[in-house]
Amino acid sequence: NFDRSTAYIWVMHTALCCLQVCAISLSGWLGDHVGNTRMMVIGCCLIVVAAVPCMASMGKGTIAAAVLGQGSLMCIVGVLAGNLPTWMVRAFPVDVRFTTIAVGYNAGQAAFGGTASILATLIYSKTKSTALIGLYHAGLALLAGVSIVLSARRRRSEEDPLMWMAEGVRQGLTAASSFGRG
Image 1 (cartoon, rainbow, N blue to C red):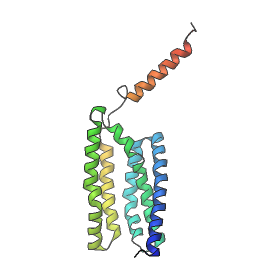
Image 2 (image 1 turned 45 degrees about the vertical axis):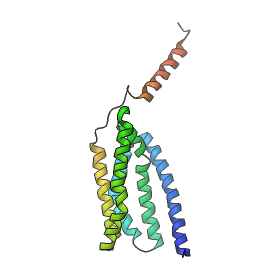
Image 3 (image 1 turned 180 degrees about the horizontal axis):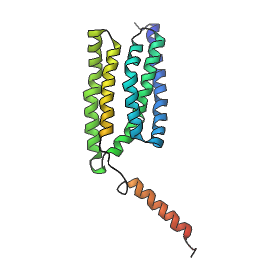
Image 4 (image 1 turned 135 degrees about the horizontal axis):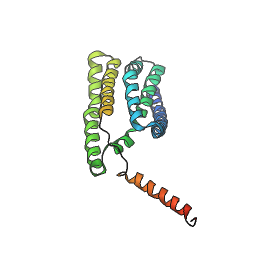
């Protein structure tokens, strides 16, 4: 039995997913200008602050509150989603990059993403509180933010293929422009 209110909820969720795509794109662009690590820390801090009120808003029982809570949280998660891929690539040396990202990212997704719906259902069934689910999100975001800040990020310079390729092109252009001048 698929009634009108269920259809409206799916349309609302789809529209909010489109909003999140915009947030991902904008935050990725910002990450290119201010740094992906900085954007990741900002995203984690925003989730720590906003997860509880956003989840509480989603539990109010009105469409407007649900749109506000879900839309806000989806935009904040978009800050992380727009910067995570670049951050992960820059975090590891080339020779171990694939393995560390594949194992680390997927293990984290399985452990926390895979169990999040189970834990959220358990929390709600015991407490009838969506705000406590937000507290779980905030705790994970705090852990992630501290991990990002404390992670030993490798400085990339000459060993970065894109950097030395760009430097080679720059030198070639300089040599070509000075050719025949003396």
